[in-house]
Image 1: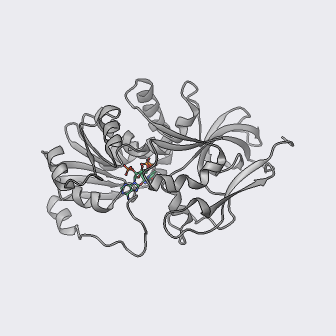
Image 2: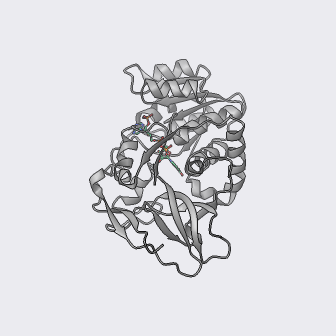
Image 3: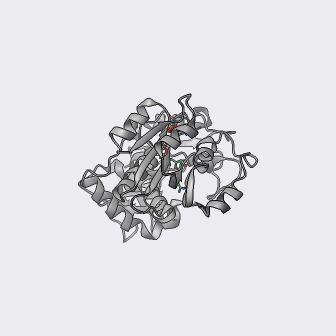
Length: 336
Ligand code: NAP
């Protein structure tokens, strides 16, 4: 261990809006020394998630903000090389908030779970068997509560979360309609992820009209990852008793102050629709149940996934910008 060094991606400046490559820098550091109850993890894959933008904005949102000079917080997966915690042994694989670095000293609070699906690729623990799959599972099934035969619309439908939402809705017997950016992602929605219809929101055609044609019976569940114009168009076509799961707000260029938009209150009243935000971490006590279902569907070939893997830690600083440009083709990961 003495000959090895740690590399860390740290926050060099606080971005105003979407973080750029230049807001981060890479430094060398010693391998961390373990305190009582900690494990030393050698990260193999780092995650790049849209949510990371919110972790570094000026104001804390649901987690404390990351300070200038801090190693970037991120989910990561790797193996334990040393343990001072009786619940974890060297050689076991773990996923958690280990940061954009080669090695992390992690206490129990940072460890999300042991990765025991030895027959499946380790990287899946950050994607379809990680935050993406869990968000899709609980956001759809617990917040969206789809019933067989209902129409489910999903935004960022070809992305890590969205592609899983569409497929789980289909497993539950729903008609699925995806909204994604560009003809390639629309093709993926139809050919790989089994959506019944898919709409390119970047095409010059009328989104309201495209939704009307794709959802002739109206919309019962909307799993929203973008907010903005897509959200407004979907809302205009919801059915009585619709459920709207607010998962992400990828379309906002800035979160300050309250973004302007329509006033949906009267429409929600008339349709008796329910709109609910959620964080995947709210469901942490039930992660095991979801992982068992998700891994089963992956093994059966009913839950397909795409990964976009960047090689080398020096790729991490530009990865959030890439997500917000729609430049990812599936779950965005950095392989170490
Ligand atoms: P992703 O969908 O794989 O990648 C982000 C996608 O956002 C891009 O590929 C792009 O897709 C889309 N996008 C970017 N800018 C946009 C814009 N201006 N308008 C519309 N779409 C835009 O990312 P992911 O990790 O699966 O996350 C999807 C969403 O889930 C994010 O909003 C994220 O914050 C949210 N999320 C929420 C939770 C939670 O607990 N609530 C947990 C995890 C993720 P197109 O190319 O199709 O435009």
